[in-house]
Image 1: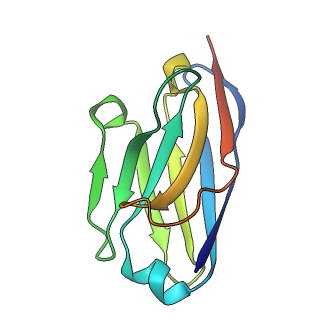
Image 2 (image 1 turned 90 degrees about the vertical axis):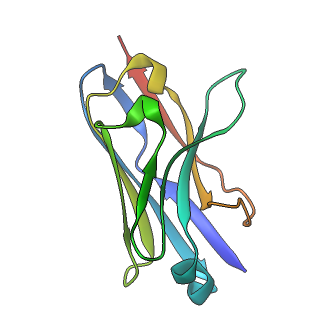
Length: 116
């Protein structure tokens, strides 16, 4: 089993940047061999996939964050990061990491709040 812990969220103003990180522990082989994603859930909305990175480092971004967010992974440190630039109030949500197939138990997430 893999445990995922998110960190790095906070309160920023529109236009600012934030970098959030997800640290994996446990079955590291599982982590390294799976595509990983960052998800977010805003109040009253379903959880959505924001960005994903494959085991071969291919990437995916949902349209609303293309050109602003960058996902990366470090298979030595066993982390997945999300660099978020030009943040908008609509990016406000709790951010979670998981595999692209949501195969791992959800962690606590990290709150990102963007004020206008």
